[in-house]
Length: 127
Image 1 (tube, rainbow, N blue to C red):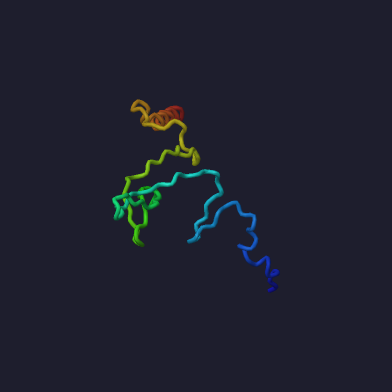
Image 2 (cartoon, rainbow, N blue to C red):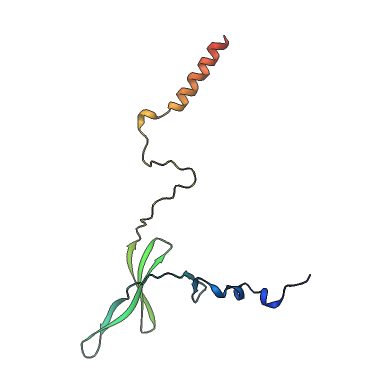
């Protein structure tokens, strides 16, 4: 089996015109022009009585739980902020009905009743 030239073997070698940012740990972020505000947490007071701040960030764990996470004196701290509210609309893919909501009770079983009536009419026609 003949291998391609060495420069074409590596997948990473070809992606020099990448539109994403490769982060430590293998996380890939898309290149967006969105800037997020810097968030700081007061972690204590200095010897002169001034507040000391640590830079923190909001992390979402398991796509549901929000935490405020920061490092202070080499130790990681976190504060639970509650469940994340997912405001994205449900996708209409998969053949779902367009108007969500409960069906009214007056329409329950109408399909079965119509099929049963057709079956009875067919039986009456045969006899």
